[in-house]
Image (cartoon, rainbow, N blue to C red; front, side):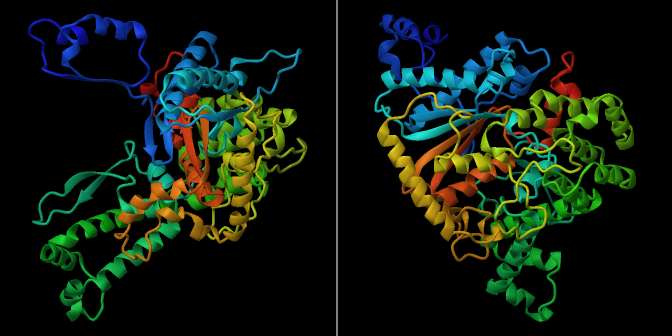
Length: 567
């Protein structure tokens, strides 16, 4: 196509600037070189190594929306699975090519590598992906200019089997709640603005992303904390704004009506953007709090967390399902998915049918619960004891904990839960991740170990000095406006962000096959501050609970497509 556009006496364009997103074969470059009429018309011909999507400053995806289905499905075919992993490996390798980083590659080992059991494709996913990435990196070392020849960072390859609860439990941060409850399309929120002239309200698409300083500051805050801070911002903004006081002076400090606000905004065009941004977030937080109330999510959230930490058991779930008439279908489904991960034996045979009837769920919904087994059940994992990060529990105990309490003061209710990767990344950084459970593809050079030990010992002493309450640690310090109450002196924050990272230790990359969650992305931001090492999360996709549930249903629904199965 390119040659037909550009060759001969009358090309379609005067100049061509060509950029390849991944390495192109020498044979194709040869074709271009052969055509002497095309050569002088080429302005640029480059390999960019950009086969990934950045989802924020510390997260990327390889855009494999069907990875869960292709790799964990009931009828897993190794050809399809291997093809998916090969493309994934190429795309992940372009991240390292772009950043000029060469990683020491660690991966979750297959659990059943003994002669008596067959190792499934599912169990070998991290092993195969690690090998694929390693092959791509070996080529990069030879072909890319200035590509490091020794390790500069660490990469840990995991899959969804390491934590099946994080994708379905209710996560209480502002970011997670927006995406869980508000039917957003990606990061797009539709904001309804009342008309200034009293006509039809105006609909406006807003992107909730890092260019919005209020979003940057509040996204990882607990929803209750975010609501409080937004109220304070609005009050501060109005009290500091002299013109607002003049408009407002006759009102003895009473509440501003929408009409007063409107007049004030018209009088002060330079402030309208700030008021717009603030009122957008105030509206979003109000909507979320209304939905939490309407759907009784506090009670459900409490039960979810109590189950995970072993403070509640089967009886409590049955009581909840019998008494909470107003609980949503999706809420009950997610509760049963958590239950199935912790107590898989409660879903065998008729027991599962009885729970389904009690929760008034359809057989389609129950397929999501039953398909949790395809991700590797928690109990099997306990038998095989994959390293020091799981809790071995007695199958006969009435209540089982699948998380240990963290030694952190939870300032907000419902913020006890943490994704499994938090523990794994901390162990990796300290050099305490067991080699037999997380082998290394390459034996890193001696100097590499030294630097990791150095940065991790430095970070552990800094980590101790930083043990503040969770409330103040929600957002990494670089994402907090310095001395700003209105959220508008945060632009400098973005400028300083990248320079702050240069002073840190070596980067840690974590890649999760089968979809990552917003809580896992939050962990990477939080640990960057705590460990003084930039932690970057990669995954095949970023899934909110409704999408994850739809994908789980697809694991056994071969004849259905994603479109048929919206939750």
